[in-house]
Image (cartoon, rainbow, N blue to C red):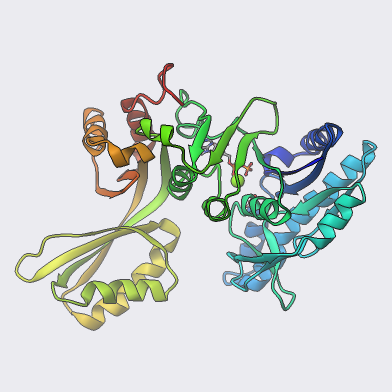
Length: 410
Ligand code: ADP
Ligand code: ASP
Ligand code: MG
């Protein structure tokens, strides 16, 4: 008998009909002769509603209370799914993250899993149960409820699969797998059969929200092979695994887009050792995560430093910078631009192929799309464009690399 961990995301459990669909699917998996652990998200929209409720009562809710609130979304789903399975004649039992043995650090709203002690999970499986686990949540050693960051049920499922030594881990969602770009933006995007951890990680961390990036990091670290597939059909999905030599033959595996970015420029910075460090130390101490950084060539001893970040962090970043910049040079100034977005082309084949950046920029130029910033890594080339251009840019880059072509080796 093999042990399967299945993760069902918010849309897949978004209504009572969908929960019944999941119940039947889980039962069918058990009837095929497997033990099943189902790790589930809050019903679609519930986490956003809870966030809205919190904003309605306070502009500064503590993160501890946010976690107590947000964890209720997943707790609703586990109970409903267990009831649905039991109602169909199965034997299921629900467990919160804490009951399932998921221990985390105390970094509320973005906690890290420290250990999983799945003794209770094993005991219930041995007793013939289907075990339903609340995703996205855990508990600190001193008993505080924590959550794992948006999309965190992916991480709960992959970490649980690793802890119980599952034979298979399936991420079931509302698309048939990982596509060459978000199929809602690029209609001719194609499903990818196999993708390496590194490519999936780059795509996830540059905006492809089909997987939470931390979950992919975890899977890579612990060698958890997982499938991404649909909860609504039985089409083969995408296998995410360690890279294989043939994978490098494909130069670009996929294109990601990330909206809601902002650009900050600190102008007139003295071109001397230590100033960049002071700018980014101030940002880091405020806990703000930044993305691309560009420093211009210096003229007459001064230079400009620009960086991008999520739009939601902009106000705080400007506040922090005005204080720190003012402290080291009265002439320095901070300016910002909203309404920008990022498009990234990702592929491990980039390591051994030249000309990717040239091809990407030429495609964007031919479409009349202006590039505002550029960054590259070994397996990614990314550009910042106007947010109004982002979908056109994604389609242009996607088509420019022939990812939608029928004979493409996805
Ligand atoms: P779940 O609720 O199951 O966790 P998500 O909404 O988090 O599902 O992720 C699935 C969504 O991710 C899809 O509906 C799709 O719009 C989006 N998406 C973004 N990039 C991709 C991609 N490259 N391949 C597939 N889906 C993608
Ligand atoms: N419910 C959480 C969210 O909406 C976690 C998840 O769905 O994975 O982010
Ligand atoms: Mg998700």
